[in-house]
Image 1 (cartoon, rainbow, N blue to C red):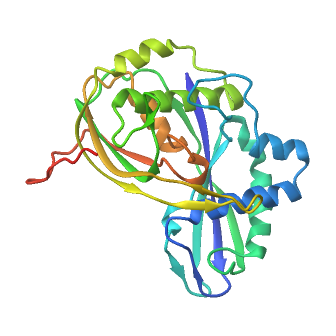
Image 2: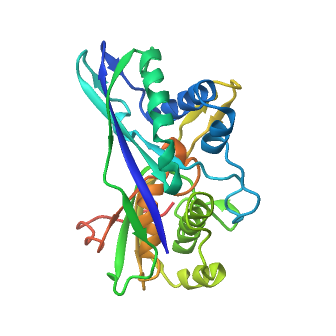
Length: 288
């Protein structure tokens, strides 16, 4: 069982002083991407890349996941002088790598139309495919007794039908599992051939050791409909402890795919620290 990931880095140079709004770089790029892709691509390619359909799938995924995520959080609140360079990444999954030319065409047009506050024109200087990864989803032969999951961008995870302030491990794994399985179904080798219910039950034995998270509230306004949508979530870190051998591969995959809602906008970006470092002296875990 594997998942193929193909990262691509897009390098730009600013024509004039450029500033990105805090917390919204990925969202702004994603919105412009959809609008431009509709104009420059055949309708069938637009649908497959930006509006894929899912006939059936895990209950946590009402909509089909798009075959990519945008990673531009490093641009949030960043400023660049004229002539300075910057970049963001796109992760393409499975067979979606064949659509790299579509992304290049879109971002070349986006560069002409402008980025950041005031839509400042920039130059698409280069497109650099990075080394691909075939991620194994097989259980690890060994694992540390605990891991620290850092939630780098706002993350929204549901548990028992409600948004979790601090998601229990079984909810986190369920969302990672469902996302990986559906990406494989649409763009790879097929849905995961596993016992979904059994994996979720076994994940309940992993406990939350400590947590320090905070709520982040962001909104986006659709350029197509004009409607405003909340993009809230939490950031911070949570330590989970238990037998992690079966579950680590899904979390490692989630480092590339994102986890939870709005991952295509850059939400749900995580980083794993294995094993979890000892908490700093005097640090009080805060569960919200």
